[in-house]
Image (cartoon, rainbow, N blue to C red):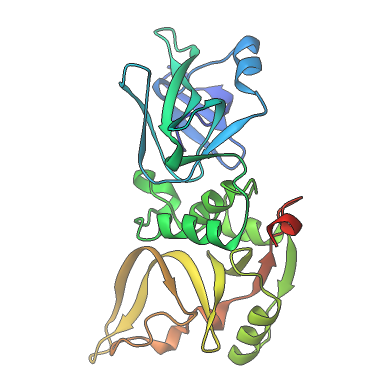
Length: 287
């Protein structure tokens, strides 16, 4: 999870070295050395109601003496203290020697952050996607990298839209649900193009979520973080062409490969639903 994520500590291990924690999007065990405890005064100062959201990848947040505090990427959120012509002053939680959280002042260039939420419009949406494209895949957040649902979650966080962590929940628990089951390939693409809103529509197949960004020559285009494409060589041996990053593709990636394995089908064959997300109080102003 990103630095400065609020957590609820459910339980400590017998030796106090591990904590079972819950966040707004997941739960699990983490080393206690990676957390800091807060009191009511800290919470009061932290929950300001005014926040900054990071809009660039791999940004170092520095203190007033130019020393490193934390690294942040697209979608990470911090309390906003002040804005100048060149930088934003934000609150950063750090642990003191007693593992109590204290607030430090951090600074981030204005080009790397925005006052949350960033206004949703096609230019801003495409800009955030361009920033995230090429970022490596990490299943379940492995090595602090994003998988498909973490990518969509961080993308929409910039615009003040909260999504659950898992792909199926993202499609089923918010927005307008459109059932695509039972449709042919052609019917699916026509439905997505007719009803989908670019950069505001999620496409889902079991285990994978994608962002619909538009269409070209009658083909749906998606932005997603994918692991790879199944292949099969001339001897019938299964393999995989590794992509391992956030990319823009059609719903049939890999079909141009000579060893593409058509027996498992493409995304278009397995897509079951679309979810159209509408930002509250922003859609009309963005038009």
